[in-house]
Image 1 (cartoon, rainbow, N blue to C red):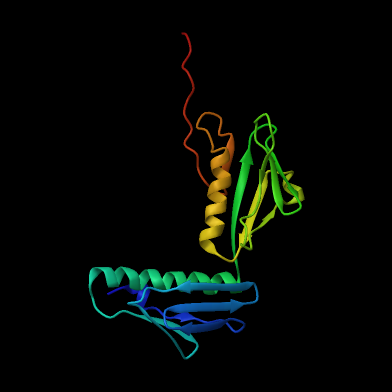
Image 2 (cartoon, rainbow, N blue to C red):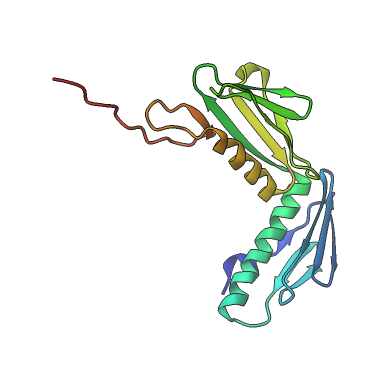
Length: 184
């Protein structure tokens, strides 16, 4: 039995859920998200909760059951609270700053790297002044998009193992290597 799929998703006060066939639409104070659930999964709204039901106990249906419930829970959380990923920049001269909606970063290249939020998404960048351009917050309502944008930014200059310079997730531990041993 799917433990995740059997749990109902509670609908907060300011969130409205509309289910038409396999189309699930979630409206909230932060925005609107839509998803097409798999045609085998039955999504219903019962007593202020969203319930996902599967037709059989086949392996594929069990997997889709938990997946569908998790995706719907992420949609409800996104439109009510939103998601945030924090990146840290480490290295001499490495920094980020906002230019309108875009993120302008100096990462040790001969040019500045400009990152634009994806078109049609509600992604917002934030660089706190007290961090002096060393911390980037990525906010949005779609968990997958926020994670993908963060991964794309991190891939511009991933942390290197010798000095630890680069862009890392907040709290990420970098395994450091000892350099050359040198002469004795």
